[in-house]
Length: 256
Length: 166
Image 1 (cartoon, rainbow over the protein chains, first blue to last red):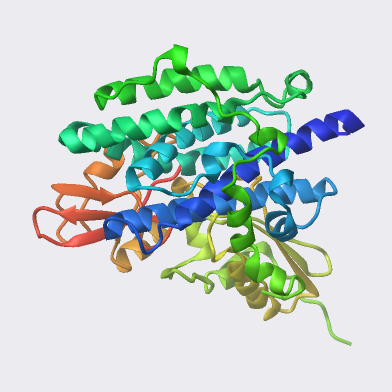
Image 2: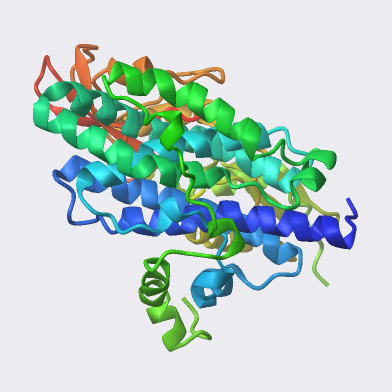
């Protein structure tokens, strides 16, 4: 399908934001490798990282087919202001409860997004979405199991999970920052928009949070952490990118 | 002057029976169900399409190379191997022979899911050692992306499952 210039711009921005989210949170997940509270969690976070980074790569490949740079160049040589990722993905791993809650909120949004995109008119993306939603289902399952267990286990674990939810919730709302090109994507039948996604997300996470006896912060306190989709980031992203791309930039021409 | 002997799709598939999954050496790429298309032109140029099991699978590029090298052993004029998501892989695509190969590797095979995977698919997996279903899911993630970790309450052994994927 042939797209007009502004349509192509809308599509590229959309693909960048999905893939950047996956790459950044994938990298953060990988920081648990060797540090997990027990070996199964070490493996789980590492596997989730591997999935997400692999998924981002195939989306960067679509971008490459549309004239953007090679996936590795895209991933390892851009600066923070070129990234369209949401703030929730870039925060340091913190304590285990923070990382777990972040994954819980993010993974649900991601799974629903891919469900929606499985019917997208952008065929290469729809193909990936059909594949990814099955993989992300396991990420959702992992986080959900722990949220319930820790929410119900004892006073300390419950208090920690509630604190983590309070800390991550506004960050999670930042995932749904609408694009200036939203209408174009809707008209093209590519994506129904962040508002639809956010509503579905609230509907899906609410019963799980409730069953863990946790409480979603009151709507009057919601302050979505917007800015990431426009290239405005927290102080945490650039140092992470510097570290992530350090080896690649030593010799960008190297054959791996 | 050599006479061209026409290579068939079956010849290619038979050859690919010898290419094993580097992470599970008892199963071939054919039985794993990742070979989604084989075409042979009139002058024996072979095009093969593979579909990834998991999108983050590190063995992907390596398997492309193995497939290419194996086909080059035949009397072909050229080989092109591409990985594509056109046909998304799922565990129902593993052949019956492939299921046996997984068992041989000590893995519990994935159950047929017909498009629907629920958490109880992972909860009561049949133990590959004693056959009991009195088992517990320890983690949906194992030593490779395609495996989950389980424990058998009957024979008290830990085991891995090749987990069902839709």
